[in-house]
Length: 336
Ligand SMILES: Cc1cc2nc3c(=O)[nH]c(=O)nc-3n(C[C@H](O)[C@H](O)[C@H](O)COP(=O)(O)O)c2cc1C
Image 1 (cartoon, rainbow, N blue to C red):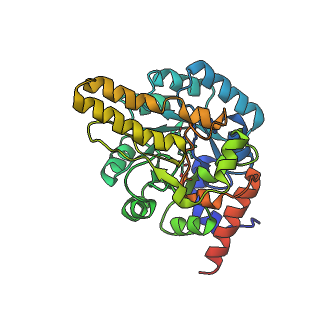
Image 2: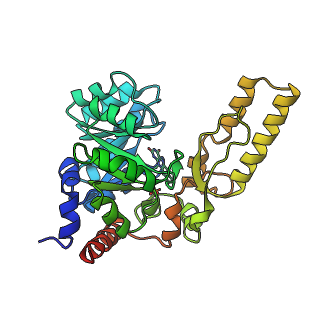
């Protein structure tokens, strides 16, 4: 007998797909989602996902092997679609018989979905619109994550609540849909499950878990922060590329605004050409997440965090976070 029968009943399709007790994914977080956090999530009954990020195939190979030593439960690997060695990374996942590959960061390139499925793995995709979601699910995606702009990290322009209303009624009977972005408590999980989601994905809530290797100063920046401190980067000049990222305000985010102004001015004066100007903007944040997560440089690094950061007030073991989320969801469903 489970402690969370109503929640688990609504999560059943998600649990069957993931091979877990609970359909709670910890979304891949570059530098944070490595073997320790990933195995802790999976050991707690959720689904951990290794963030491959910019890792080489050799590094990913080691990370998967290291994670397998820490858990016998299923976990996945998140690959960024524009990684220049995407197909080699897929081979590494195949070699280790990784059961689920999450393709993030853009439309999967030709042949990538087939290559993953060729190894017998399931493919999880992201889509920002209903039309693209249908296209990806019809062309081989086994499950979809919809992620709203409340989330930490790279974001789209639409909120989770609106995406959920657009996508869940249209897709949830036929397809497996997980909801991400802004989830801090189980009551909201209950709501999305009732709308047809088969599970949820959280990042911010797990980033500062006891098992997370994030630098103590990175974690300390999260605890006093409020929802309004997790802001999306703003594009000042339409000529200069800025991919929106949600992160805690710090010296780096202020300097980024100043940098855009400075480079825009140089462009106006003709002192730099467009290519050079765009490069200067793109290079500003290079390595910034690592600086914050690993080195603990909370002034200049990127403190990627979602709006649910206000609900992260202390370091907690992953198993306690998962149990709290499930209990809150169950209590909410019990009141219906
Ligand atoms: C510090 C941090 C790093 C992240 N890095 C990645 C990443 O490398 N790849 C990715 O697909 N998503 C990344 N994300 C997004 C998470 O996987 C997850 O979808 C998101 O955090 C869910 O929303 P929430 O933050 O509101 O819980 C990151 C999020 C955070 C907070």
